Length: 396
Ligand code: C5P
Image (cartoon, rainbow, N blue to C red; front, side, top):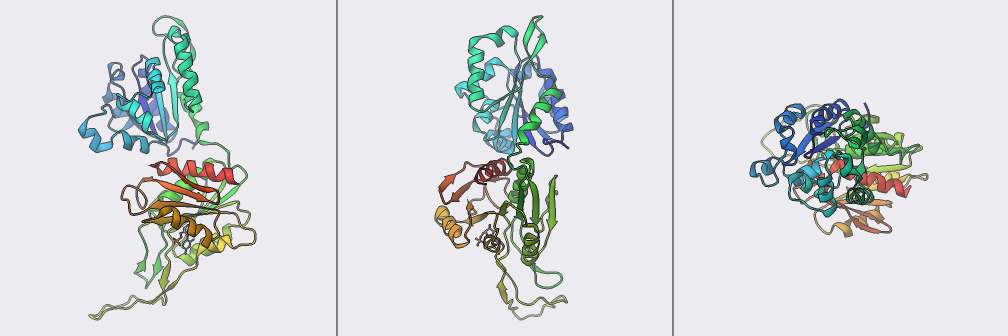
């Protein structure tokens, strides 16, 4: 599998004759392992029907900015957060001019404006339109703003002209997208990440645990592997798929997690503790199922080891980054944790908010380190993971 495997790609289709190729592009992206949703501009629907793209993508096609039904299902902000990557193919001259102006009067423009994901454009237009100064200026501006411009190709055009402006073939677009997710910023580095909850057994059938889904830690592991790191994920029990190109070590209790972490940490340059490690475990494990009776039951608990603090105290410690799940005074609590556990950075999020944190697909965090506090925007956990990995790689 290539680097598009398991990526969430929003394919934007605008109104040009090359829109017929978008149908094939959906398939090619899926062949590369991506999960694809489609958003169309009103003009695109004059060239190809939403039904075709819905049937191919297996998802409803998004067309209306102000459709109340669609808003309830997945509005422009949810789409903007869902996507790991936006690909607009074909991208007309008009659509790109509107992007430059920051217009948002259709769903696709609004998603482009709202998203923190990278955006790739595959321009398609008549060669005369392509050569115009206004188009060249708009392209320069979009490149400067970080848009990826794929193509166009040269050759015969639907209007009978010959020249530059043909949309790249779908397979060529997929090939051009692959490198966007393999940045190699962590090539030659070893990264160890803890994720998920731990379970502390009371007896053979009962345990103490918490609501951590593991999504943030798994997203970080995927992003680290994409960035070329030798990535080790020490995971408590989760329902998540094992990420590709990651050494996954499954553990249950905090003590298992500590042991696995210490075994994996040799030669590691970056350790990220994203696990929600249970702070306490039952003092005594009863090896037969405890029988209930009518009286109250007292459970005596004792402290679990602090995994990240143990790593931070190693003589040859890696860059050590922790998480802080807080309900108030985020920055202040995170800074306290930074000092108390001798960490290099703390990623803090507000778990009192239902739209982020535990079990959510989105997150919004503060990155707190010795230099200061940076507030990152609300985004999907995979987008955020990539951003965090690139920031942490910069600290190595
Ligand atoms: O102390 P608190 O649980 O708030 O700290 C959170 C950070 O410490 C997270 O990075 C978490 O993975 C880590 N931690 C740990 N071992 C523990 C408790 C927390 O590694 N026993």
